[in-house]
Image (spheres, rainbow, N blue to C red):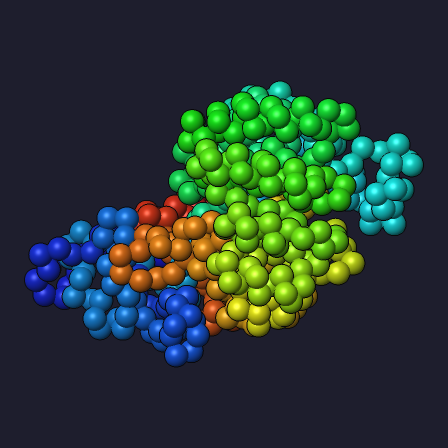
Length: 432
């Protein structure tokens, strides 16, 4: 059993021993870009946790004295310890999927071809299934996905509303996210995405209702921290999105933008103007856009797994992004047409398809992703005083996470100092 209780045999316990200590790691990766190696690899390092926070990380000899009689020891068995993975852009809460659309697209149908064939596709197809569902039903559908993500090492998930496309449905999906967090122990960050798809009729009335009723209700209920908008020639214009984001800012919600995925519509400039936490997708961002975003402190989050799933004609050039000075985050973009649950796999896609280094890929799913949801002061790296979100991976070197992306290497997953997943624990059903 990888996680065990132990009575320390290291002399008298300190006055304030650790509650949990991780020993036996080949590497502890701090995810500290200021380190000489750019990521902070401690060979043979160890980590100590008290309550919900990290109290020490460093050479094992300096951590052992923190072991007391009640300290729980995690034996990493030559594996790698990283911060808990952060998925900064998902659509976790939805019923059903759009696998039918996916397979029609793999046979060559594009948007026009799907429409000509009389097939419902895109967000409106998901609206048919999700509109009017209660929070409990949505939470039930989302919980299995959330547990799979947790088992792969993801400890914090951002998720959006935006599939019911009406006031009550948006509130229900954000309430469902809370229920999932309570059931799983995951930290789930809510984002209101009412401006996800343009109604065929009455778009102006739809936006008026969002601004007058839904945004205030989301803010009053503490259901979201962010407001996202989809800026695209076929969805909402820059001026429409500016209006929504201004109302959201007045209500205390921070801006995020789906933008520049298919054409460069100027979303980066709007994001900088609104002080957005992140610009997401960004396939068509120019070098000038990246400089503007870097100057504004706005992250760029991109999704190589999504680009692969939809066969995007211009996948993101991650190396160009990384060299621009902008904060580059990675996410799954889990959604009804991209059933992608593993940030380990995201790292593999990011290295092979998008040109990132293994170091940039790991930072992209830890510290940089935490920055994209304004959580980097608490999560995303291993440092004393930070939240004890940690993963022990069964690999000898952190770079193997991007290489072995077709498997789940997460052995132990710790959230706020609590072991939520131990993949090596004995299974009573098989006698091990």
